[in-house]
Length: 289
Image 1: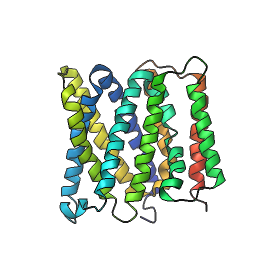
Image 2: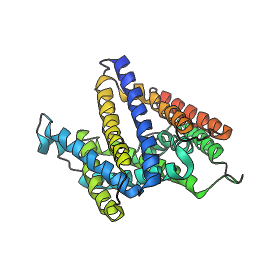
Image 3: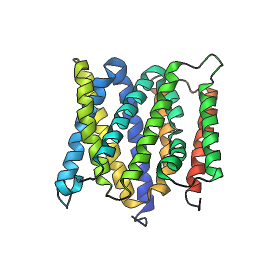
């Protein structure tokens, strides 16, 4: 779309979407901390695959035309990247907590900027490179290597952010010359197949109350994406992207109130640096490079 229909509604839909993502993260931490991460994500993928198939069946052009793509190999690569990204970030939740994981992951938009040059051939101004550099400094403040607090598990959300950045850049590449729906559909379906192969050997029984948590987790994965779709129907993505950083605020509140996590001062300072650099980079998107 080229113009906003209802910017205020779009903003509130984005806020609701990131709140749903934060709640989803909270359930993921509990479930993956109790059961196999692979099994939990496999079941989430089954539900999400059903969701995208239902959307395809409801498309006005018909399901076959809606999912047709000349870039299936790229979608296969994107699906592998997304599966690995989700597994790593959820594993990170169980190792270093929600707050620390998402604080590091928030560098992802800046990594997308950095990768857009070599992969998409986009011109990146020195101001954008400066924003990327500042964001990486923020990550170093969060991780504090060499100060006795760094652990191998801190690499998990950073690797996850890198994989999701690659996924996002490849998504922009695949949607240059074809509709966006195939880029949304195929990772859900291919990912379900991949996670089934990975997750089935780790299938284990669940307690009844955790089945309810799993249902909520899967439901939130659908709700969050549905809210994003509705958001982008109302307003351009660039106008609401800054509000996506609210997920860090929501997750911090959940981490402290539900899981008893602590927001350490270096993590808070590093997060402010990363978010500030990200918002600056987003502001540059509205100017000539």
